[in-house]
Image 1 (cartoon, protein in one colour):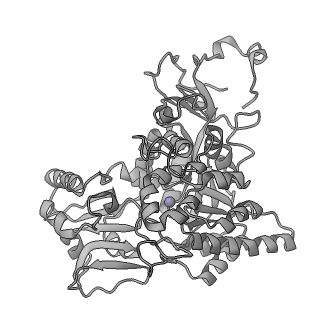
Image 2 (spheres, rainbow, N blue to C red):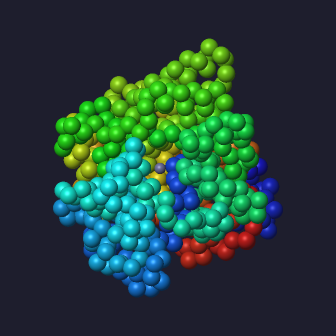
Image 3 (cartoon, rainbow, N blue to C red):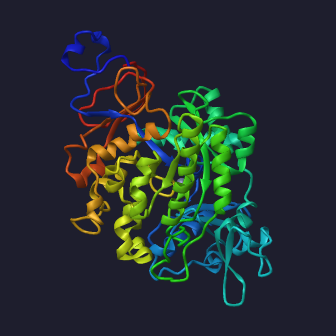
Length: 514
Ligand SMILES: [Zn+2]
């Protein structure tokens, strides 16, 4: 971007290169600072199990069973039993009734559980005698028979038997995924998926088809290899670069596996699950830091967040002693934080990478599982922003919709699009201003990705990534923000999306520079 300005600047513009956006609102391109792009893109090809009832999911499975060859896998994602009637976990018998001849594997909306049918269990050789893995559990009935639901790492017992997906398959799916993202105003993503996803991004980059700014994480399981070959945070170029190492400390709210300081409201014996021993967390983050790799730590429960902050505190002391530049460490999700830890995010300069749409999706679960005393500290966007910490917003897609405007709406109103839970919104003291919410999708996300000097602002010297909205969210009625249309999206001075149906919006040249 060469210059940004008012009327005086127009005098310098070549008339044939002028584009009048007809009163639309131009913002810096939106970055989704936490999402799973491979999972999202492949998901576009699969059953959408995010349905209001179990019967609707079963109907979709039945439909696919009728149209696909016997024996082929039926895959899907998005079920959430907490949203279905009594809230009971589903069973394999339900799937067997609608798809007896196809192996079925459906992952939960939280990403922390899966649901399979008997055919799938047979292929995976899972039976009553199968032992639970160390990092998860097989749900069983009173007789010990697996019910078809698998928690956390136990999902791999079946998941590892799914047909192989190649890097090219992923790259093909990502092309479609990129188009979808552009149509929603997204110009960049921080991708939390694995190494296959990194390879697919590189394939797209090599084919000159990468049209998003991608900050990529490396899974903890590959940390030694990353260190061994000298990868550091920031390595790459302005299209694709390494963010850091992704480490899981706990599970999630839905399956009640988020690691908590105090027990779950509905189960005094349950503090959630720690997915890593504290010593292992210290050692992983230390090793990564001494190799100049930042840590992107998944921490949802207040205990998981505290453990992570404790490690960062040690790392910061070390950085100061050694006089090395501070790494851009992040906590992913920050769904419930103890009041004593909020100021530590800012003082330790730990990025709070949060997903506003989770707040309105999960609010009733928060009330139920964490209770009224702790709920004010859940999805505490306002307190975190006011503490001076950098807030970066994302969607966690495909856990939630990838669309950023519904995310801005959720952060600003703390209400669902249908108006729930009422005019005030849920925990309304945590509502953010429109400006702060947009900042978390632009400048905040850029800083979280280590590229705050090149992305996230419309300013000279910054890359020309922008989105044109049909209406200005700053002046729109707050309940209408989620519905604001995207008129066009530009990445690197090139239009990657144009909505020709947008009101009064001019035809744009295929390529132009600004
Ligand atoms: Zn995630």
